[in-house]
Amino acid sequence: MRSSTPRRFRAPLTLLVLIALCLSSCEADRAGRLINDAGRRHLTGDQQGALRLYEEAARADPAQPAAPYGKGLALRAMGRVPEAIVAFQESIRIGPRFRPAYIELAKTQVDQKLQNDAIETLERGHRHMPDDEEIQSQLEYLKALRFAETMK
Image (cartoon, rainbow, N blue to C red; front, side, top):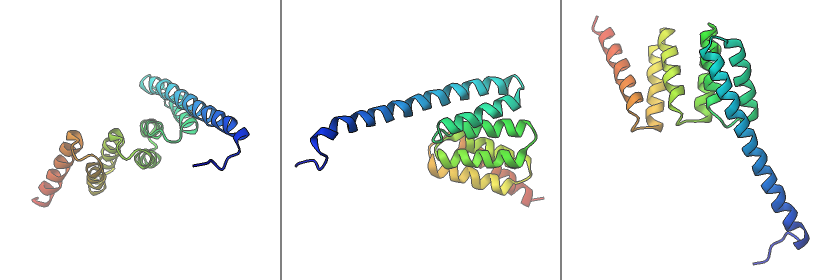
């Protein structure tokens, strides 16, 4: 089968693909470094600095669910809970099998007295990761609490 690309253009196209892959990998590496630095800032209490780095990481690699997840942690620590919920939801949208986002979103929803939303969040996580024991146990716990509330 003959290629429709003229012979003289094949090598440069291959080179362009390799360059694009390298740049993509470089951006992913950069995002990983930013996420690590942001995590250190978060742990030392510099939430504003962590937030800035998580946002920069999200721009560097929009397919990385850890950046909006970390952003959610920083926002929640700053008391900006509605924005934290949106960030956790964004993390789940990007990485539907990224367990920490489901767990932290559900914890945040419980803290906001949104138990039914937390159960829905964990059920969604369970559908994506049916063998995940942490999601399963958190889901069973919240359902038991909901049942206990109905018995009062």
